[in-house]
Image (cartoon, rainbow, N blue to C red; front, side, top):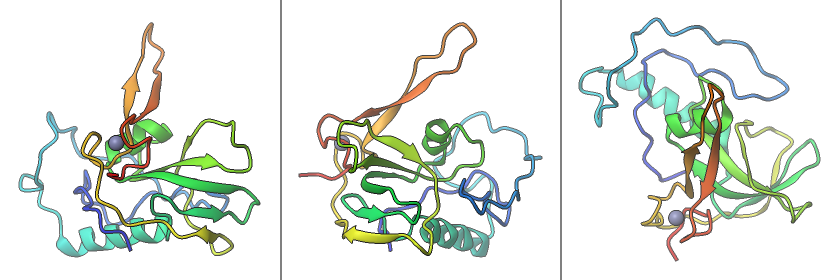
Length: 177
Ligand SMILES: [Zn+2]
């Protein structure tokens, strides 16, 4: 299980939109809640049922599975990836995955193609996936608060462009060294 604190979800709907995986069930529905003017630190203004929050955390934890930073896993599709960072901030996850309902994302590196750039994925842990190397539970990097980097917005001319900038201090692992 992951020890990082999960941010409060934006809305208190009972379920999570499914992660993009081959078994995706389209449980998405448009949010009927008005956009909040500012992100709030606590959920005081929008009290969510603790049971719902707990259920949400469990769903997220199940979807991420044992993929903590540093872990290497083999996916059932045949890829092999090293987990560089686990992004638990929904806003960052949405920007990374360009998907409105995303609650989390992983920054992974394809270890079979060492020259490739790290990519963000939102694919849920599947039964056929397995760990090749255990990750580590580490203190979060102070420079990026354990996020492993930040989303940089270079949008212009009506084109939305955001990319992930890996933290130079922890090299994207999100862990203090
Ligand atoms: Zn860092």
